[in-house]
Length: 401
Ligand code: 2IP
Ligand code: CA
Image 1 (tube, rainbow, N blue to C red):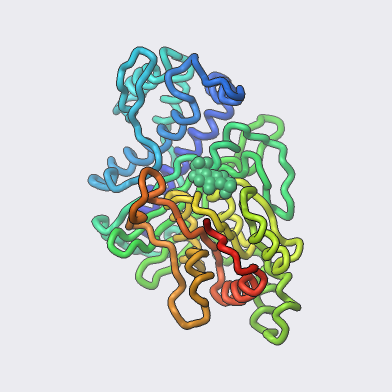
Image 2: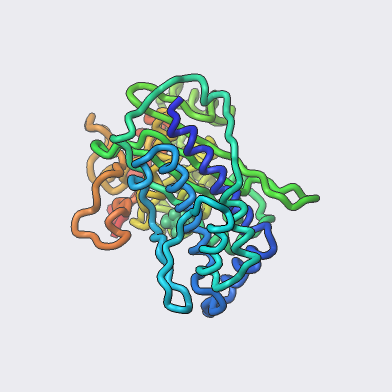
């Protein structure tokens, strides 16, 4: 197995430990709680703690990878910058130091002298982690490091991370909100072609032990490189969905008959015309959930067939990890707008999202937006039927304004 993937899994686990520590350790949790006060910025500390947690996770991923694979650190991209200015006007570059005490010292400058919090954070940052998965050892593959770029989303669904309800009930396994919607996303792509090659989705909060209140997480990965496709969910998906799949291949006589077998997850901010079309295609099997990473994970897990989003507010770091895993499963992630504009049945290749080029004429984070929206899917056959139904039901509206 790719040594890089193995290391990414380890650092994602360390990142998940940091995310859990910030929720579970009193000294740190208090800082997150401060964020809840509406309309009032946290004046006590130089940075909002949410940003610090985000940046810290990103730096841990970057520096751990750089230590193991020199040169790779500078090819890891994300939304956050690691430069802070504290209340004294000092500019501080947040980085991991060789020793725990040094990291604590640096963190305490950003946290305006909060020793307890700085020490707690430094401790978890310097803790060793291991990650094992027998499937990882099945294949030996070496991907040359110089063709790789990496997108990182240190904490996706930050709003849920802070608001963080622990007791949200799932609907058919899908959490509409809550800590389960938080994910750490690491996607590796080919810098020449933009194709996603390896992906890691770490879900730090999956289940909570009610006596210790400790959370357990789960990690998903996939690799798709030169004809090798391997992922952590083998053998795939739920029985329910394989049953649906076989109906799909056996009976093509009446599309509408089985169309309600399709299911989709959407954003709470999805537009009405898309919602209306989807409810015609999927009936009541349209679910809302927070977090772009979490919604893609629902497709990976087989909880739904599609994640569909018509707006331009997801970014390369939101989609790359899941896209790589879905590719390893035989699926993908495509540009919704392009799909609707060009009929998918003309034999053209599907407009897969790519990760190496900026959007022309865009500025700031929008350079890396998935500007035509997206559809994430596991099966191309299902996708084609779904799209033809969706197009029939979508009134001729511009879905992406
Ligand atoms: C967000 C987060 C949001 C998502 C948005 C992402 O990332 O995943 O939940 O919106 O697209 O950019 P929605 O939940 O409506 O899909 P972050 O939390 O990292 O800003
Ligand atoms: Ca995100």
